[in-house]
Length: 399
Image (cartoon, rainbow, N blue to C red; front, side):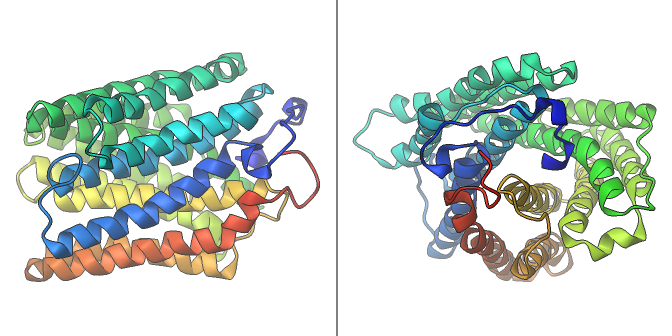
C-alpha cells in the first residue's frame, strides 16, 4: 500500500504524542494480532473442554462472530485508516479519535463476558464500531480522486447491518438469521480481499519483479467482481442450490485466470509478495470448494476454512507485515521469522481443509494442529512487530 502513495498526496500530518496513535495501522494491526492469537487459543480451549456456553450462546457462534467482526474488522480498520489518507491526501483519525475507535472495538470484545450487564449494552457498543469507523473515514474516502474508493463506505455499512442481524439472531433465538448474517459477513470480507488484491498485487509484482508484466484487463476485473458479488448475494441464502454452485465455480475459474495473468516465477523468491499470491489462490480454491458444497458434493467446512484460514489469514498477515514495514520507514522485506509465520498460516489452512477431507476420523487432531499453527503465525507477528508499532518511524518522518 505504501508503495502506491502518490507523491502529490504526501502532505499528511499526524498528531504529536504516542507513536501507537499516529496512524490507524499501528493500534489496529496490534489489536488484530492479539485477537488472532487469543481468539483461536480460546476456541481451542472451548473445543477441548467441551464448553457449551459463551456470551453468544454456543461456542461456535462466539468463534464465528469474533473472528469476523473482531479480528477481520480490526485489520480492515487499520488498513483503511492508513490507506484512505494516502488515497486522498486527507488526514484520518489519529491521537484521541484513534484511541476512541480502538477503545470501542476493544469494548465490543470484552463487554459480552460481563454477565452483570444488560444484554443489549455490549451488542450496541459492538454494533456501533463499524458506523463510527465509516463516519471517521467518510471525508477521506469522499475526497479521494478515485471515486471507486467510496465503495468502502457502503461495504462498512453493509457489514454493520450484518452485525445487527447476527446479534438479533443470537439474542432472539433465530439461529438461521445468525448463520446467514455470519456467512454474509464472510462474503463481504472476501470481497474486500479480492478488491484490494486486484489493486495491489499487480502493482506490487511489477515493482518487485522488474521484468514482469502483470496484466489486469478491465473486463477481467469487472467479470471477477461481478461473479463474486453474485456469489455473495446467493451463498448466505441459497447455500445448497445449483445456481450458487454454478456461480461459485465460474467465479473460481475467473479468479484463477486473474491470478495466472499476475504471475511471474521470480515472485516466489520474494516471500512478502508470494504470500499474497498464495492467499489469492486460496480465495479461488475456496470458491471452488463452495461450489462443491452448494452442489451437495462436500460439507461447507472445507470451503469456509479455505476462505478464512487460507485467503483471509494469508492476506491479512502479508498485508499487515508489508504495511507495518513500509509505514514505519523500514525496507519492505519480510524478516526471516515472518517467512516462518507465512508458512505456518498456510500449513494451518492445508491441514484444516485437506486433513478433514482426507481423514475425517481425525477431525479433532486437524482442528488442534491447524489452530496451533495459526496461533504461532500471528504470535510471531506480535513478537517481531510490537516494537515497530509502538515506536516512531525509523526514518524520523511522521506516522
